[in-house]
Image (cartoon, one colour):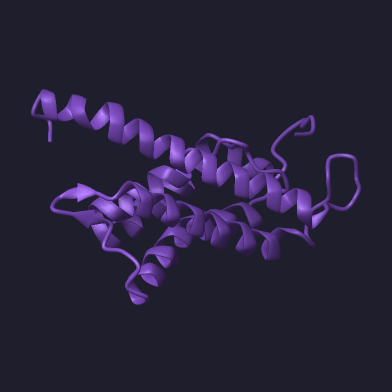
Length: 165
């Protein structure tokens, strides 16, 4: 990763946990989660990223792409009958990993088309597509898998133990 003075939308985070949160929200709550996931993602851009550091057009557009990517990935997997994601009320982890990879690919390619001609690297050079794809794809996949593993392995048993779910 390169040194950044602020938020640079051409460099993805190498551990992007929100991808896993979005995937699990859609799996657990269905497509009804779309307004809540979109609103939560937009609010994080406003409050945590200071209105995307001035990228007030491309920031929300990228956020929308990040929310719709898992939505469309689930629709694609259901259309081709690839998975129902659950077997007797237990989640099929391998299918969720494939869903995360597909969501990350859709998100990365969408953001590539949105951002690549609009922004420059921190040094003023044009962004190389391969670096862009690498940083976003790796971050989405790793972050998504880490988030799902943590929630399913540690948080879910804790919530069940104290009968919170």
